[in-house]
Length: 172
Ligand code: FES
Image (cartoon, rainbow, N blue to C red; front, top):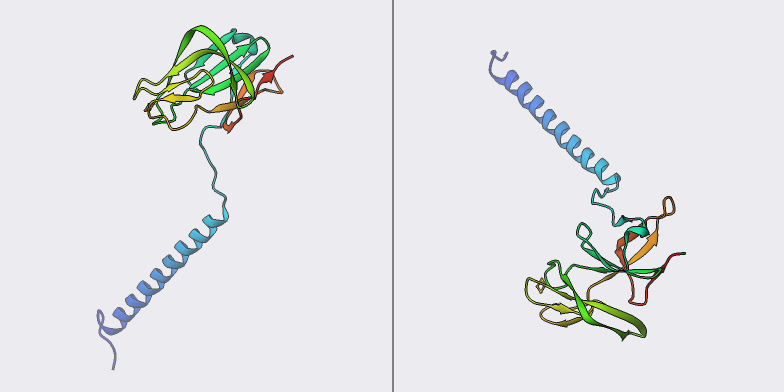
């Protein structure tokens, strides 16, 4: 007994091909996923190390860098950097010069305070060394490591490297 066209054999062939195709597709997807797991994830986020410019462009006192949301302080040939990112919900704090600069003991380090910081969003206030003194801010402003670029001597900040308040970069 033979199948008529469009019945038994054709249907079996069709189902066989369909099953084979689905199997190949499943294996291909699985193989692709397996191969992808062998490739390391690459981060295309912006680097955390940023060149800020030659030290000659930093005046005595404070300079605000809006792109990095950073305050860079210069005291003669020493530099340190304080984050302008409020520790409450991340608004940018403003610097306000003190009428009477003072020196305070900050965990054993003498820090000259020339400014204080105010957050415009919910009113947090910080001392010039970044210590939170009032408002909802839960912790001090971060300090970040500064260094000099080996190739051109520019000031460099590492926004992923928080440092203690006794950190200073001294340039020659
Ligand atoms: S974000 Fe600064 S006080 Fe809320």
